[in-house]
Length: 357
Ligand SMILES: [Zn+2]
Image (cartoon, rainbow, N blue to C red; front, top):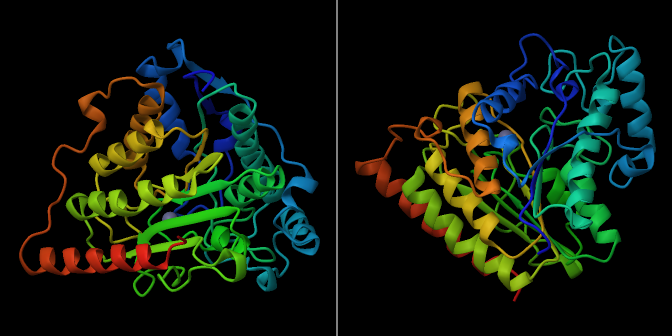
């Protein structure tokens, strides 16, 4: 590895778009992350770098998305009052059309592409775009707050260079759009840990969705029971992610680090704390793979601020101030403990049984 540099892609323009005044996804949340890291002196460290985003090109977007869908997003961006429901965008739905959405999404995606280039060119050991990680967008459909699927675009562009890519998604929701994009190939291994689709959007992500054709065994899913806490999540991660990623031996590790799995998140029922996230992100950093990281969901703004600040400090190899951690994470007991542990045990076994050999 050429350096221990950890790059952070940021510009206030990544934080300025508003889906709808009452919408839970608030890009402004990144300002708190940036301000906290600035106050802690993170960007003054010798191995830190702040990189400016760029706009993704139409060609890059079309690595994953159909041209007619991109045209529809451009039209929605200019005239959001028209009807775009056939493309997954509805005024009062999860993913509303809004003025400037195409331009905002080009910048969000381009920020992830800047992170990718920095890592592939050897400029950094890891680069992160916390504005990205929009893993639900499909080839011809917006979905779940996601317009252009930047993690899938990055995985696809890396695969086009002949690289093997391991994609690990620790958002509370199934990484369905990324899984769909690489379902039939063994060049991109997708692993998603998420709340069970029987209880949460998008309703998919079961162990039997394991890929098809050459891709059989290269889509790995770990549906976790509602109320899964640190004590269950950490062993589940350890049982599946390190062994499968190491067996696959990727050229690049790509991670989606949505923090809507946090116990205080208003949209999901997973119950993990900053302790789980410290554990996962320390493994990503210790693994011997160039690493492109993204954000994702996260709807409790203070949990987002503390967790993503902590994660970037881990990327830098810096110590973590105690005020970033949850002081008192929840621990399930009694019948709920038994239910969670049994469900997680089953999910681990099923995920490993479904995996490539
Ligand atoms: Zn999510």
